Image (cartoon, chains in turn blue, yellow):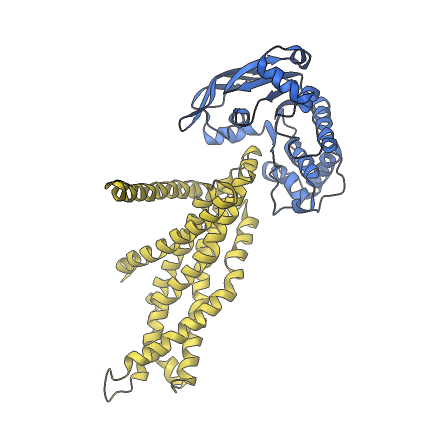
Length: 241
Length: 262
C-alpha cells in the first residue's frame, strides 16, 4: 500500500503540488487525471523517488521513502516498474537488452535464463520474436509495449504508467489499455496510471483521482465520475463524450 | 540597461562557474565511490575504451604527425643564426623531442579528446537525460553514476595516456620526416640527438598530464551531460559547454602541473 500525506512540491515560485493526500490500495488500478501541467507526472515521479518533494511524506508498505538515502532508495525501487510517456527505451540496446538489463544487473541468472524470461514478458505484451530489434525500428505502440515488458521484468509490486496512451492512434491506444488491465489482473500488480485520456481513465481505473492546480479535487470510482457535478470533472467528461 | 548591469553579468558568471565546479566535485566524489562496481561493469569500460581510445586513433594520428612536422620546421627556423659557427641541426631532434614529450603531445591530444570525446559524452548523456533514459535506469534500481559515468571516467583516464604514448611516436616520425626531406638533416643525426638528450622524466610528466586531462575531460562531459535540460537545444548547449569547460580545464591544469612537475 502507498500512502501520501500532505505532499508539497514547488519549482521556483510555482506551486505544483499543494498538500496532496492520497492512498493507493494493494492490487487496485488508480488513475490520476488532470490538465497538462497540473502536477500529475510530478506526483508519479515523487512516488518512485525521481523527484524529491519539498514537504510531506510518502509511505510504501509503511516505509517513509522521502527520507531514504540513495542506496536504500535503489533497494526500494526494486518493488517498482515504470512505463514512461515516450517509453524511454535505451536506444543503444536491442529490445532483449532493454528488457533484460535489470535482470542482468540485479540477479545472477545465466544469459539463457535471462533470454527465456525476456521472451516470456514479450509474449505477455504480445510482441514475441522481436528480441534483436533496435528501438529505432519499432513503432510508437511497440515501444510502449517493450517499455511495459521492461517495467514488469522484475515482477514488481507496483507499476507506474506515465501517459501510456499519449501519441498513439485510438486502436493501438486501446490495446495498451487492455494490456494495463491484463498485466494488473494477471500479475496482481498495483498500478498507478497518469493520463489525460478520459477513455483510458474510465476503462482501466478502479478509482480515479483528479488533480487541479496541485490539489485533488475529485476521488472516486469511474461510475461516480460519470455522474459527478464538479465543474472540472464535467469539463473532462465533456471532452470524452 | 542600468549602470550595474555589467557587474551583475560578471557576478552571475562567477557564481555559475563555482556552481559548475561544485557539481563536478560532487560528481567526482560519486564516481570514485562507484568505482567499486567497475569490475561488474567491465564490459562497459571496455566499450568506452574502444570509443575514447581506439576510435580516436585516426584523429590523434593526423594531429600528431602535423604537430611533429610543424615543430621540426619551426625549431629549425628559430635555430637559424642562433649559434653562428655551430651546426644547430645537431640539437633539432632534442629540442623537438622535449617539446613533444612535455607539452605538445599531451596538450594537443588532450584538446582533440576534449573536442571529440568530452563533447560526445555530454551529447550522449544529455540526450539520455532529456529522453528520460537516465530516469528509466533509476527506476530499474540501477545507479546511473555507476552504470554510465564511472565507466566513461575510468576509460578516460586509462586511455588518454595510451593515446599520448602513441602520439609521441607519431609526432617523432612527423618531425623526423620533415627534418630529413625538407631540412636535409639525416635520420641518424635527428634521432641520435633525440636519444642523447632523452629523459624518462619528460615522458613520465607527459603521461601524468594525460591522466589528469583524460579523467577531467570525461568528468566534465558526464557532469554537464547529467544535468542537461531543455530538449535538443539543451543538448546542443551541453555539447558546446562540455568542449569549452574541458578545453579550459586542460589548459589551466597544464599550467598547474607544469609548475608542480618542473
